[in-house]
Length: 331
Image 1: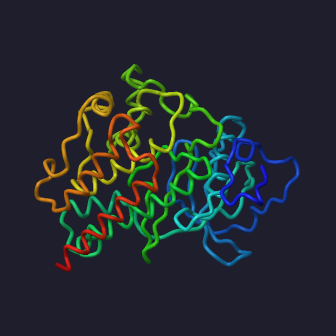
Image 2 (image 1 turned 30 degrees about the vertical axis):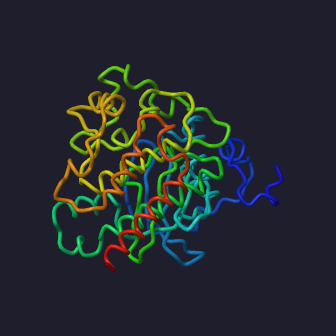
Image 3 (image 1 turned 45 degrees about the vertical axis):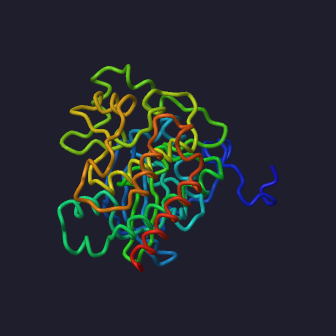
């Protein structure tokens, strides 16, 4: 493939999963003044100061116990490189990949400030006056459209995000919208790796299912998974991201997810088998155009063939809804 001639070259495994070369320039010593921002199952996120460039950055580091684990290194490097190669206004720039003083992989990226869409939605649900004034329905649709543009760009490069949820949609202080966490993204030519995504979750044991939740906290990813993800289909395409965006839209319209059972297994059963309650029925006090409800329900159809077929098609429908809303205000 001639990457210079193709403005949207596919991102492929050979360009994301290879290990670091034996000899490379490592600049970990330039980073100082570390502060913990968060941690997860495979790494920690810290803010630090880049003493060479004179700016704050965020650094994600693979946990020391996983430093020599080949599979974890591969996934970590894929996340860093996919994020770096998706150069779009609604993705976060990656600056550097290297090894820290403990020989653990790290990558640095832009340090963003703001809030995630989950906490914004929760404040709206709680009738916080300042949040209601700032995040009108039009503003929420714009956030969703910007997220969709990042996904459409990724899809054009052969990348499927596979983990769309409000926590991964970040809204900055100056209106910027950033889609984060490409850690389980599928890249061009890759079938679904059952070691990275749940396989046939409808048949897994209850113990395995419970590992998908965090004790005492809201279940994350399972609530936004498409039916084909839950069923462990070998191949998923961009329509799985379309489904997840539809679930986020449903939550913005109703302040609740379309499918949530008393446990993860029941939630998966609903995702696969139950028809969603129309948003206007789920929350009749929330005002929005019925055209927007139809968009939402089409995006979360069980059969991928019944959904919007591309993210750009969904974005066009959302923009048309915006125009109709503006026209109704003028009337």
